[in-house]
Image 1 (cartoon, rainbow, N blue to C red):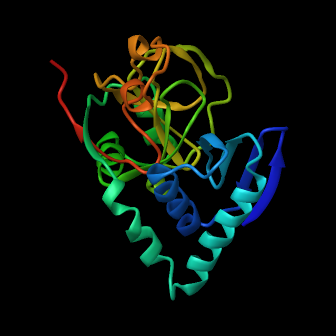
Image 2 (image 1 turned 135 degrees about the horizontal axis):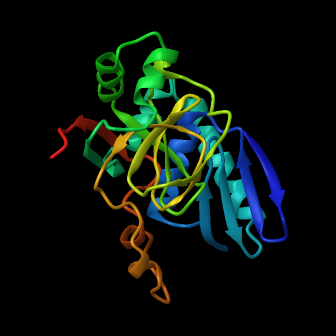
Length: 221
């Protein structure tokens, strides 16, 4: 784990192991360190933002590092975050524009692609790219593909896609270069809640880092 200054109001906890990152999420969900006003979760990092938080972040990181060192394995710390994990079943119509090309590129049938995509329990690793977009860990290695050589200019909200080693759900209409597998009606971003003067993230975004998702194939009407 690395501790780095980030601008004039931030401290970045970088190069976190999954155990350390999970422990920090539990810690921050329970209480922010003194001087910390908000935090942003990255793929293997956590950014603490606020006034004069360097000392607090350093003390907190030592606490987490010490706790990690006391574990015989990372499982104990990963299990510590289970109480805050939310699980969702997401119905998905597999009608994506790239479904057949994904099958061909992976030397699979369309049915095998669907089976491989619905089999795992995915975990939200981080949020980013657009409001409410989840980067999902857990994609079967047989479906790992590089991004499309040419991104699309417009992808509809609710489109489920894969890119690299991740799956994701486009939360708002946007460009994108991932491979499109299907569509869900589940809204990930609440615009009205976001317009509130002091919005609650849980009202604005359907998902948060650490949440779990399972996709369920649904037939088109």
